[in-house]
Length: 466
Ligand SMILES: Cc1cc2nc3c(=O)[nH]c(=O)nc-3n(C[C@H](O)[C@H](O)[C@H](O)COP(=O)(O)OP(=O)(O)OC[C@H]3O[C@@H](n4cnc5c(N)ncnc54)[C@H](O)[C@@H]3O)c2cc1C
Image (tube, rainbow, N blue to C red):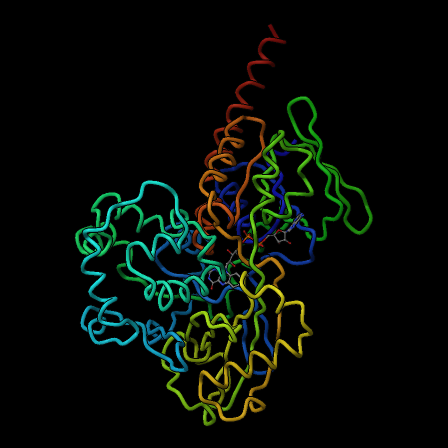
């Protein structure tokens, strides 16, 4: 009997497995595809090293940095060029740097004088206890311009979502906390040392061979604890344990287990809805996902008219624009492309432009090249070469209004002691750092559950003996 069967070998399932391994808890990870890593995927195309999914992670997560240390791969970390801290926004046909300090903020023309004044008057705005959308929250406290020129593009980069649907309480919990505690978010940012210290010493990282190093190294450590190509997974509940059947190369395999940890996307839970008590399945499967296409392109540096110093740019919402933003990969990691080329990773689509991803890849490539050329002052969009496209039909879970209640219900389900557990980026944050932290949190619950199961088994055995 296994203690835990983990379904899914993305970073959520792998990092949970590694945590169980460290705690001597017996488990097996089942993954239907032929690779571990899920959304994390690095590819070598010609002379370029590219990412189809996540590009970087920040040093601010204790859990991820500990995981890297435990794996012994600190020397494989690759630090982003320090200039990559500079971020830009594309607005009204121009790239504008996001101000990184008070002086720059006063000078920037991203916001009008009126909007800047409104930030000072923010102290006098009443706080709102009820859950509200990002749009309502930001407009109420900071005005429409801040929403349009900062928050919408920022969330394009994170959620590729819709500010009219995303929950401010789920997306900006730290800002909501400042509002509650200090009444003013602007003043709260200056007054709260906890808030300020949460961003101190931020460094952006990947690995010299790309993000896949992280998932590959966990996979290598766990090796025979990960079953790839596990098809037709079926789970049934016996009296107080689970029976898991699946096929590998058409051969049926089965396990029994005390508990199941689902580390799959929320929408994929529809396959296992029959296992959940009434009412819970819809809480999970109804979580919306935004679609995104990753479009990787190269262009001769000599053809680019704008400065390309920095991380890249995010786009404001404009009716004829479909691009969410572009990462200047070769500015962040210069060794990932030949020195005379710019390597660009663009994201297109999102909740507001869902239909884009249904178009033929050639159309997606042309549309992206056209918008990139306009933004980066490249006179001929045909000089941009598309080297890779990946369409993520369900890319990023949306923390829409009601998200926090939904998560509470999922926590409730894990606490009912039926041995079903959940992890993934649809719970407490969408980044790799958040996902690793979520898996750790869930493994703490599993440890308690497994201990209880083992203790009661011992008691039953003792009773039989006596
Ligand atoms: C385009 C893109 C760019 C991103 N950029 C960044 C970034 O720069 N930095 C950052 O921190 N984060 C980024 N993210 C987010 C980050 O990649 C994810 O949060 C993280 O990888 C999610 O891991 P996961 O294990 O929860 O899910 P996944 O990686 O989706 O893994 C889920 C696994 O479950 C398996 N599975 C699915 N359905 C089933 C089923 N029915 N049965 C069994 N198994 C199943 C899948 O095959 C997969 O292996 C990005 C995401 C995308 C899509």
